[in-house]
Image 1: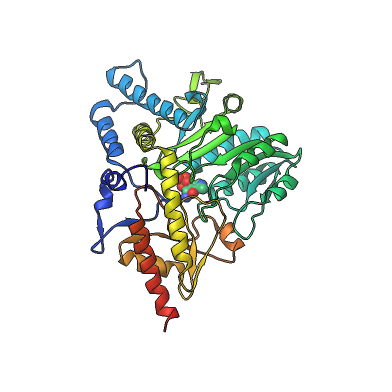
Image 2 (image 1 turned 30 degrees about the horizontal axis):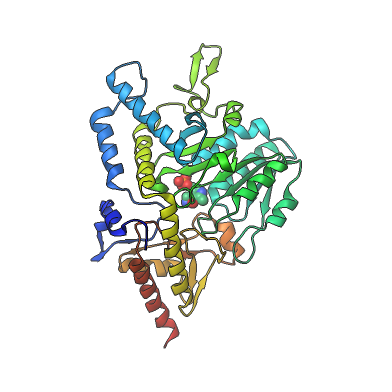
Length: 409
Ligand code: PMP
């Protein structure tokens, strides 16, 4: 039994009352994006109804309200991930932009020919492509931590990759394709011991696992608002104070400067230095409301409940004839990935949609890890705290029916 009332929680999410093909929507595509509680929708409406302005506090009343709302959201983010101060929080468009910011601003200032950047085989394309581009630009070399047959990173192999040449380690906390929870405590500690800067892609973990960046000691940690019940178009780059202080800006423009002459500019200290132009003010405020909502339910409660959903789904799906689970590590968060004999993953996704069940089928922007298992695509149900065991059962029933068509002739 969850420590919260799932049915009450579901009423907080208006979209969960939608019908799809005449059936109640079963939203099992939470790893792609999450649904939004009324508290977030209300907060956006309130912002545009009562607070909307650009953020320049001194100008007038609404500017002060908008600035306060925006900075309150920054504080909420800082507290949510255990940052030492709000100055360590940079608002960006999402995980992708956060990683690109680090690659473009921190990268050239800290990486040169012959240096090494370490990622894992589990990474989302967003944590692969920017590093390939940086390596191309600087002559650095990309190294990849291999995974075992269960989809867990091999720490012994990681240790062997580390050396004085390692300048950056950038690894996902939870795999979006398989759900593997990576032991980032050890990844960070070993990386630091080798003298590297360490970045964590927390896009898939922040909604599911309590995170404390101060305890972890990560140098950078990034995530997307839309995957944690907030709006699209807003995300977070956490940077440790000392690291951000030394980092040059990436984009130039308004807001990020202290003084501009036609000859030269003096930049703001962080985080302003990294927020050129008018930011996504309303959606930052909406993200703050989302994090406050999650805090009210409690991440430890959420983690425990989702664990029971994943266990139940894994157990039931595993028993279906012709179904192969991909990524069977002991530590998993909220994602199950599988293929079904006789069907393309997209055919399974299409069939499930007829029952109102939304799952992702495809390569999940993580082609290297799927190919590691000889696959181009999987079916990926992914869970949030508003999902129920009954919804998992509906998924299992629908997949079983597909299996029976090919296996019990
Ligand atoms: N990293 C991981 C692990 C992800 O799951 C995602 C989103 N699927 C991203 C990065 C990219 O996030 P966004 O598209 O929100 O920038």
